[in-house]
Structures are given as structure tokens and as C-alpha cells.
Length: 319
Image (cartoon, rainbow, N blue to C red; front, top):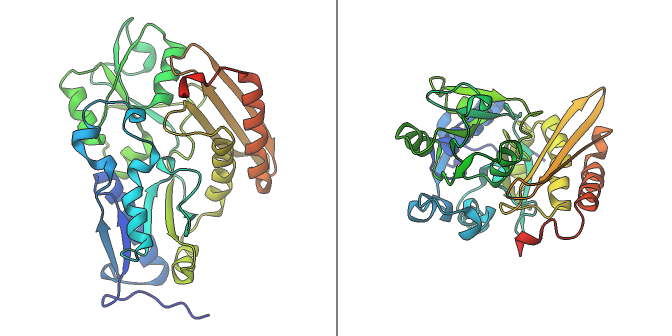
């Protein structure tokens, strides 16, 4: 089948949120597609769609995500637009994506993965170890909150919602002594002046799929599938297959403190996983290794092991 390429007269419509980071990811996707097929920039149209997660009245009110909704906060309206045929593909931060897509949509194209690490951000301090007793830490991530309190129960962790720019402004205004962002986001935004110190995954295991751009399409759209195949990173997909299988096995959501990272090692894949109580009082960590093509089974196996170790009642707070 001959692939029909987009043109300035009939551009490929790329759906995205309107935050600076979301737009940077959409622009990267456009650039990669243009380079792969030698197409001009105007052969693609970036369509900004406002999601529930972009409602500043809700999101910037420092309310925990679990009180507002779940990961669908950042995807629902975009996916509905795609199902209506208003856009052709949608660009997402994969860590925001549920493990199951709505009927008729698939998430099966991923760009090469960026830095997976969390970044420690503070105007005065250089590392997490520099925080004095009782320091105020701002974060909206249940994972980071639980990991911090597990390591430093003396810290005062407060809600810190908003996009990257909003959180940095709050930090500058003294709302907290430090906050955390993803290194990948800072790099994609070229925010080299931000006082960021990368945290080793050994000290703070990242969110599942952190640093990854995922591209969603309609399941029956063979043209979009052919276009995306040219920019798809197989190695990233193999890593995410294991991580998202782990997430699915743990029934993970924005209400669940879960961390996970798959990395190539000695010709195979090593998957690390962690589950925590939301107050940080307990953390269970384990790793597993297998062939890269066995990532889905590996994720399921690790999820079952973590759940068995957690035992009855570990996740009771979800109800």
C-alpha cells in the first residue's frame, strides 16, 4: 500500500494540550515526522485542545489529583476529538496515560526516551541531603511524596500543582524550600538556567514511563500508523511494555504511589518496581530480569510479587 503523505493543503492534525511542555513535545513530533518524510512544517497542523487538567481553577488550587479525578484529566477531551475525526494523532506524556485506551484508540508509537531522572529544584540548596529538618517540600506527585517521607519523615510535604512555569514561580515566591520536576521536561523546554540537580534512580525510582512521548491514533487509521512507524523507537517501546505491564498488574493510577523503570542490561531487560504507602511509612522494592521480548510477562510477574509482599491492607487507603 502506498502511503499518502500529508500536504500543506491537507495537513496531518496533531492534537495536544496547550502547556509549554505539551507544545514542545508536539513540535518535536512534527519535526521528526517532517524529517522522516522530507515534508515542510506546514504539512502538519498542531491543534491545541483544552482538557479538564488544564482548568486552572481546579488544578492550581493545590488540591490532590485524587480529589479531582485521575489520569483521564489530561487526555479525555483530546481522545474524544480524535474519535470524532477532528485530529489525526495525539501527543502525550506517556506517564500521564492510563494503561488502557478508549475503544477505537491505540497508543503504540513512542519517541526515543529522554532522561528518566527526577530533578531536585531549590534556589538555595544543591541536593536532597541538604534539606534541613522540617523543610517544606512542594510536590503534587503521590509517588514523590511517599518516597520523600519514606526517606525523610521529618519533611513537611505540601501540594504544589500547576505546570512547570507555575511551580517554579511558587518556588521563587517562597511557598516551599524545594520542589521536584522531571529532567526530561526541563531538557525539552531548554530550561538550562533552572537550578536542577538530577537524582539517581537508585535514590528516587522514577514514575513509570517518565521521559517518554507517546503518540496515540485511531486503531483503524492505517495511514497514521505508517507515518508513525517511521519515528517509532523500538527500544523505548520494549522498556515501556515492561513498565506499563507492571503498572497494569498493580492496578496503578494517579492515586497509587508506584515507581518503575526498565533498562537494558547484559543483553536483556532489568525491571525495577516499587510500591509505597502514601504516608511513606513502608516501601517495597524488587527487580527482575528477562529477555527484552518478554517485557509484558516480566511486568506481570513483578507486579504479582510486589502485591504478594505488600499483603492484605497495603492499599486499603484507596477505598
